[in-house]
Image (cartoon, rainbow, N blue to C red; front, side):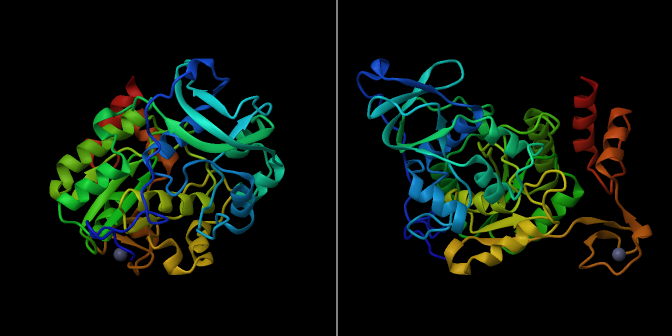
Length: 378
Ligand SMILES: [Zn+2]
């Protein structure tokens, strides 16, 4: 692990934490204005705070092409997904203003180039499919036809949906350093945490100094559990079952792309910027539907030399409660018949919760189930 000399935490991707927040430049009101989509707004906020270090703005053609073909930036540094802003036409000036969905000006881009891109090719490379039933591909196909590249300066940060959980990479790093942590494992989630997730985060925590529970709170598909409900689940679980001095809960502002394997790499790189030396990758990480094989998001890490990513992936199997073992286990650690395993399908869990019934305690902590039942009622 390449460590930051002051904190001994893992160094940011590319060596330096980028900060693209800044003062509002003069004459912004006179500039041509681009209104960003919610996914582009998430990316912009992550550029501002250095979560996407070493990127300082939206990608130029060289980086874009290189990322699609080789999963590396043009300088060779690993990078898995395009970070681009789409426009209808090349702007007239060399600087444009960026607005959020309400029309408020929040940033400027110093335009380096505008270029054409092939949506089907990007879909195939990023998502491994050109099927427009895939939510990430559908969003890509709706984009405007050109990409605009250039460094950003963000003078108005997005209002976080959970202010107390909004921690920039510099802040999580400071918090880890203050606690004396050096090795920190990050856990990405967009679902409520059941016993299975609790188990694997704790197994991972046994081997490192601290745990960052980092739920994604940007855009997700409308049928995912709402972020507010998920955050409440994390709170009750942490309060009841995790030692406070070993865990940091913070929100990850990214929008889901559902790019499966490539998004697993992208998520790991982002967490490295937040100060994580390790990253949990479960089965079908960031997947959707049947587009990716069960282990694709783990196997893709083999396409990099270990020192290239630096952050270390920790791979996990599905886990369950085994009645004979009398503990949580997985196919890796339990020799017993599946009849001994307490496993409920997502559909079954939703049925129980919808009927106001608690799932078995071996599957879900009652405090978490109570939050979910309440959410189903309202
Ligand atoms: Zn067993």
